[in-house]
Length: 433
Ligand SMILES: Cc1cc2nc3c(=O)[nH]c(=O)nc-3n(C[C@H](O)[C@H](O)[C@H](O)COP(=O)(O)OP(=O)(O)OC[C@H]3O[C@@H](n4cnc5c(N)ncnc54)[C@H](O)[C@@H]3O)c2cc1C
Image 1 (spheres, protein in one colour):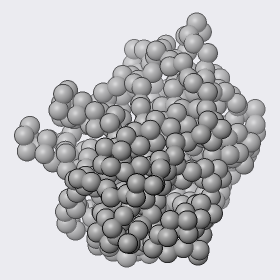
Image 2 (cartoon, rainbow, N blue to C red):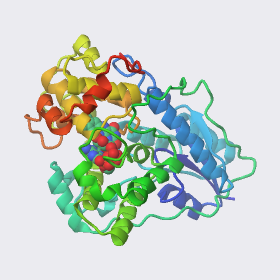
Image 3 (cartoon, rainbow, N blue to C red):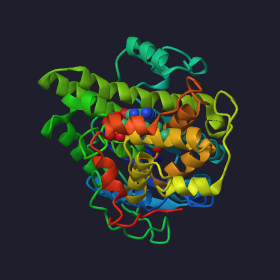
Image 4 (tube, helix red, strand yellow):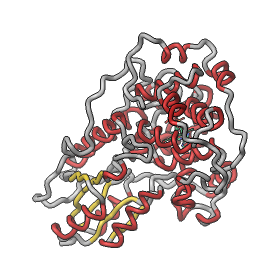
């Protein structure tokens, strides 16, 4: 009987999952495995662990939810802590599997994992979590436009986003195949007291992802005002807050896109409903940029091989991380991040600009800190956006400095956001350097 291992990566869902569909159509039995690679959670070049408590909690919750989804389909999730190229061949042999099916990922380390696994096992890679699939792009990857607007115009003209497939009814799995949860000492994490000032509590897994999508579109119709509110700083509904679940793949970009289209059919389209798709195209753009430039996404001179002029002054960096630069708008945003694992897009643009252009630091230090803390951490979006702000990425303009005082006047005119996060009597930060 033909068997396949389904290697879950950042595609932690059963609907619109091309790797799962391919495994089901080619094999009689499917063995679901999720692997956490210690290299991606241990020390960064700056000394601190690459994943901190907020991200670890979100990952753990997401895995628990995937366990439940699979159990409801008659299957079970086997979770392992280790390098995929060591874990997978062992399971292939033990279970006499014929192939491993997995989602293709575009960031360099994930591509390295794919190369390592392909060298020792029969690996079949499937469509990524993007709106447009690589083969549907109207240009070859080597010809990817360097400027977002050129990319967007070409893909918008090129055709429709593929439909999202529903969950399978049943996933045939051998009855001897046992689920294995993540052990306590794997991805260790201590429980967090949630800060009452947090914009919202983001719980890992598809159940929470679908609830958030429903809330933002159907329950509140906040989507119809998105373009006016998206630069907000306070509260849950100024933006979709879907990024954490898009990063883990608990929901796919295509699912969000088609739900927005359904919403437009029922409630009418406007600039706001268009704009959410526009932002998802930014996400696609950074995914394909990572695919196109590989390891260059992480080098100091960026994908343009420009000059990185920052220093690595640790005291200035610690002041930035801990929200103690003395610039109130920057400090408020950095404290929100350190207390909750979240920061708005407006905040991210400003604190990144401040680190690079005001503090004169190596942009990669900021990217490492974001990687540790952000609950929605995604290598392509994080490193791509940091390069962009630092002027060594796509559209390499050198004058991307934001004036934080002006930004605060525009986006926090009453000072409510700064007051919320700089109140000296509030809870201590969860994460400091
Ligand atoms: C320095 C810096 C680092 C960032 N790091 C990350 C990261 O690690 N992970 C991440 O998902 N986003 C990152 N972003 C992009 C953006 O800030 C977040 O995607 C957005 O704030 C998430 O909130 P939301 O889901 O409410 O977004 P919405 O405004 O509701 O947008 C909808 C979706 O569009 C996508 N999107 C929006 N803006 C961007 C953008 N600039 N780049 C790529 N995709 C975008 C996201 O998937 C988002 O969920 C970063 C931005 C900056 C400036």
